[in-house]
Image 1 (cartoon, one colour):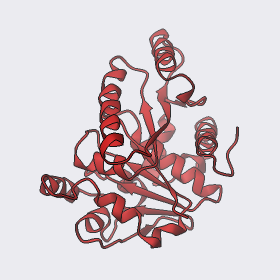
Image 2: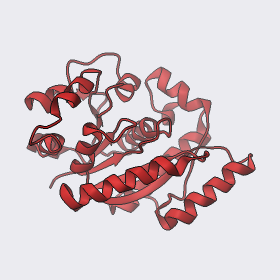
Image 3: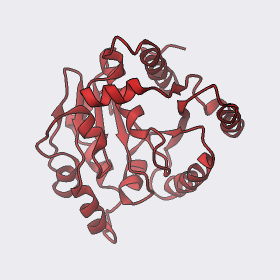
Length: 255
């Protein structure tokens, strides 16, 4: 049975795609799931936040069907991204299989050993993001409770509609996660209310609060769940990971 593939995507930058992919992936691996994280962003921030160096990754997989998986720990693996993906993205424009390369890579039987695959995407709706949308079973949209936060999301949803119509009719919206939340300012509470009014029960019950502990976790290349001083943030991450499993209908989730 093929693993479910979850894409974290939003055209707007700085909304927490990489943070959520990383922290939820680390948390699920810690709870026993065999996880593969795929860095589809040429900036390679997910890769840099997990490992010091790699020997190839997604570039080789998309350009030469050569899959090089980096083991981060016992149950967490990475298909790394780097700047070469931007060159590949340009070269794929006009190719007949431009938007199906990643789907073909993830269909490789060797990846069937994973329980879940999480995709981190660039802050754009280019070839790499559309590849990820075409390969995914489920979409999670990270959003910041900030002004104009809905604008990029609306662009993404229009692209999702086109992808469903042409490339991946099975793609479904799993949910929306409010990231970098601060309950003190009235405006952020109001924007969270607007997000919930727009998306209803698609909004995850748990938010990920704004916290310096997340930056510290990235700097140490360890998940925030492994930092003893980050109890509140770690609890939020575990709750988000559990809710993700519930929404996927996977065992191990916490209703």
